[in-house]
Image (cartoon, rainbow, N blue to C red; front, side, top):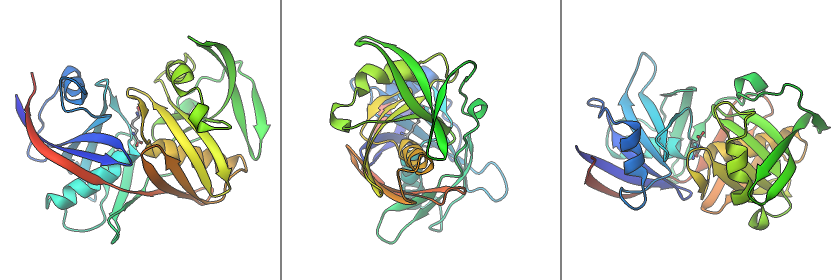
Length: 287
Ligand SMILES: N[C@@H](CCC[C@H](N)C(=O)O)C(=O)O
């Protein structure tokens, strides 16, 4: 099958975007994996599909596949690229959108400076909804919240880590580290991602608090490995930092691929602002 695609990136988290507004391409998980492959395909952390409105009051449906071919609920950096894509292709008339994802409706808005702000919805803390199995697990109170103690077996040995667990539509485990440059992202990331306490696996964040309005962040993403930035990971880290009493309500998140600004008032939706850039367009043969 021959398909047209657009390559995009948001803070270095990169995407292949497919226009399926005139009909589904009907790709299989193996074909998503092929497209995302950096040697045989185009290369991407996620493949994003733009589908027509599924109902009244919704502009589009946004479907997300990780590089491993699995469909997932949410992708923050992708949401900004999605908004830029539908605007640049003339598919959307205005600057604000309502977009259906697997985990609910999000609302991206194009700003005059070219960045995109997304209302990502409210975080979810109920462990069963993350989903996260807490049976018999110990936790430690911290700020107005608590962290869970997780036992990990990694190729570098075993460890007990303390993590804040929440969902931004997709599951996140966030731990605080002294220095993201030396954090054990590749040693612990795969073990956290596939920890048996997370039946749908999890995204693993490593956050260094610089001060009350700035953090540095690396994320080992479920189904993609370490990416240069993770939008939902940035939202999850800031929400965790606010609930643990370390951060103010507006925080600059410095990732390896760029800057994301996250705002949360402590109870409502989380707002994420950052870049969304088209890199190139092309056509490829997908076996
Ligand atoms: N890069 C994304 C998150 C993509 C999905 C994630 N890997 C998952 O499996 O939940 C972002 O910017 O949020």
